[in-house]
Image 1 (cartoon, rainbow, N blue to C red):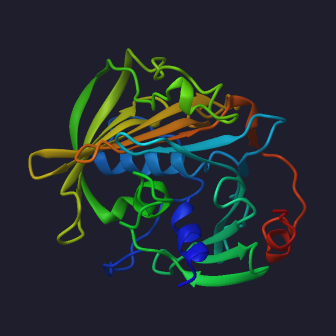
Image 2 (image 1 turned 135 degrees about the vertical axis):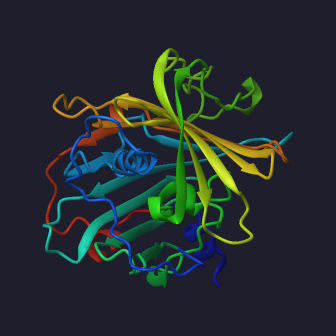
Length: 319
């Protein structure tokens, strides 16, 4: 496979090696719950929130000098950065075969000028389809979805973490409720490692979620011989935003992912929140990843041309 294509596949998910029986997915019109919830119901709500089903569409755009920055820092190494935009469209009728389309455009870094369009389908048994624009070749390539455990852009996130894992891929157990009393992780960048894209990033982890009531849910994978056996998530009891997920192999914690969540101005649904940042760390290596989304670049329910999520948009990307 062409090296740029391989890197680009790994860079966005934003696939499965196991065959699951047909299982209903999470509906885009999933109602806000009431009463006592089961672990399965909680994790369906978490999926709803992470796929922005509270909105017709969700975008992280380019606002002057503000843009989403992906920082990857190996232990003892200088961090690398890419910047990108993302446009997610959930506005498809219930009888459509398409459930959502997701467009990513890389604006700087090694993947500058690369674009990817992912189509997700209502039929959960059908794999996502991928189209990628390779600027060096001036060509579009089509391919099947990657594996759940493939690294996302050489980062500490997998495609399963970012997009592909669905509630029915795991069994879930509610461990109770508690108060979340920690700040979230972040990547510390030395002064001599700063770039134009990192110099204004936060200098500490987000602490706004301290004191929130959370569900604690244990999710055990159904995949055999997997890189983790189970994960424990801390989920806001009102918004269903997952603040922290700890991954375990046996009794040993192997990875952590923190998500900073911010309200996006839609007041009729507590689940109408978006990402402030993602932070991930692989404990065995010390590698860290930080995807920071400035508040000013979040857009919801905007108006786009009907052909925005299309091959023609990919071909118009400037390098």
